[in-house]
Image 1 (cartoon, one colour):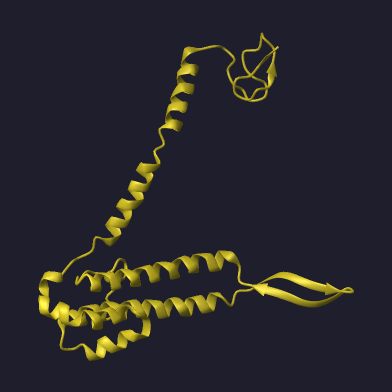
Image 2 (cartoon, one colour):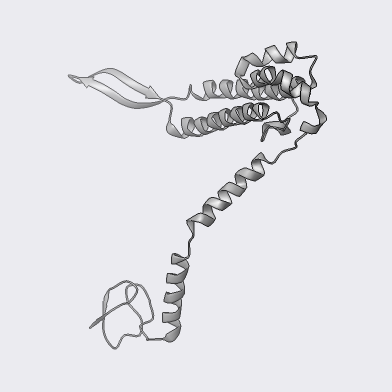
Amino acid sequence: MKKCPKCNEEVKTTDKFCRACGESLKPSKKGKKKEEEVKETKSTINTDEIFNKIGDGFEKLLDTDDTSKDYTKKDIEDNKGLALISYIGPFVFIPYFCGKDSDYVKYHAKQGMNLFIVWVMYLVIYSLLSLIKVTKKCTLIMGQIISCDEVTPWWVTFPLGLIGFALFAISVVGIVYTVMGKAKKLPVIGKLNIIK
């Protein structure tokens, strides 16, 4: 008796195929080469390459139109603070209505307003989907149901949490752009033109 090289099942020495998995029991050079190739491909998975691809994806996401040269240095330096407020939630109304004298502030206020509108839509959708409840656990005392805990399922809250995190990250990107004195479109949100 010998063992199958694939499934380790005991087989007769006269068998040509394994009865358990169907593997050929004939010794062949091709089989050895294939095993060596599989081992090589398994060992050549490079984590640096994976992280580089992820980094390239983020670079493409952040590679948006830069119109900084359209604004004067004085306008940018004098109005950075007001432009920065554009990406802090409802405070966007301050630069939107008070920054009419600066083209730089108007640029960021419009983007901030588009981002704020997306935030409001997100919060409305989050609130509505949070109404979906499933019973998780009921408390029984002497055969009587005292209380039942109802929660929103994870398959609703997890994607919504990721979207919220992405919107927060986009807000941070907008703040970084204003601190750097750039007039770049925000990733994803920059393509929306709700407020023009």
